Length: 531
Image (cartoon, rainbow, N blue to C red; front, side):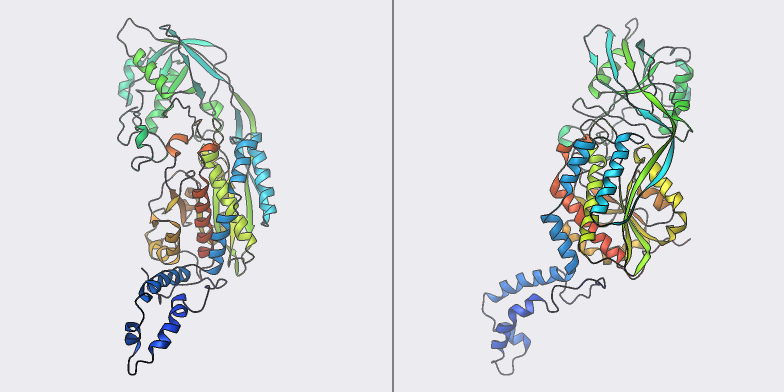
């Protein structure tokens, strides 16, 4: 329990509920009566209090302490976010009406326009779309296949990885498991892969379903914490292995969807090439985990057993350049408008599900935060800039473009805060390697513990739009959240609206709003690393 007299900083535009703690107003009549005891001081007056008073006083102390921790404005925002949120209405529209939002598609542009109109309706200023370019676009076609030897009647459940070419018609090929973890282990496969369908190593090991919500291992996939599965030998070697298969004349690459329950997954990061069509020369397809494991068992049987499949993939590259947009809006600061706190999420998604958890939930939280802070009528000292980035799934392309385009103002950005791990409750603030922030954050944001945030300076994870800001020197944070189905839904066909949990999204908006107010109303910007 905190002491009543603790001197906590208040933003200048916000005041506590009362100048006097509730405990003193409640106990005043009791204390006045106790003064009849001649010569007795405050301690004597307390001894004379009726037996029921200590219980009342303890309750009032807790209430008085709680009032002292949050400002009147923060209490208002917290209450109205809980009672009148538009989070689910917005998330439902984004998921059901607009649908998945692959970077470079018309659906993403539709989402840009819709979120910009929402920002304007909520009273944000300087609402606009900021453009950046892709050298080419991509459209998903169909992917279908079946096992033809042995004739086990299995129709394969497949999904192409993004920015992967098609097969140019239906093809048949032997299935070969490429079990190599380094370059020397590839030598036996030389001259053996022409026209083959390649399995990129053994199947992964998945968590038991009962363990999916437990901590440990990576929070964004369903792999067992100590799984030894694929033996990729690292990302660099994985790319080398794909190049080897291409040079050897392989027809298709199959990879494990790495998800339970027959779910499909997709991916396809941008690897720095000018045009993916020039570097991604082999069709790359995921197959549901259970069928991948079956194919691997069949393909690793002793000779003369053969495993063959029939497969067809239909994708299309869209000639570029293709213009993509980030959606931006502001609440202009009242005292230091040229200093900025960035609040963001990514608007783009993969396209097998609805893009609800990754990252429609973050978009809905950012929009609700903007709505509540704009309608409260009390602008903070610094400008709050709300950004919905795009191209995140291709390798943080939109946020990288934003940082480059705004290089001159980066020294004036106090912080970047991102919501991007699904629907779970916010449990920590993941600051990236910033020990100098610990005393400041623990002082300024201790109020967040009332909202259920357990760690104010927690471990951060890479892989979202805070990273380009952090690399440019801006103190940056991605919220740490409870798993809440994220391991199952992440990049899979299960990323749908029914996975969303409204109470935890409301909590996320409350945490983002209070964080924004506290950081925007500080006397100084957040400290930066000394060079």
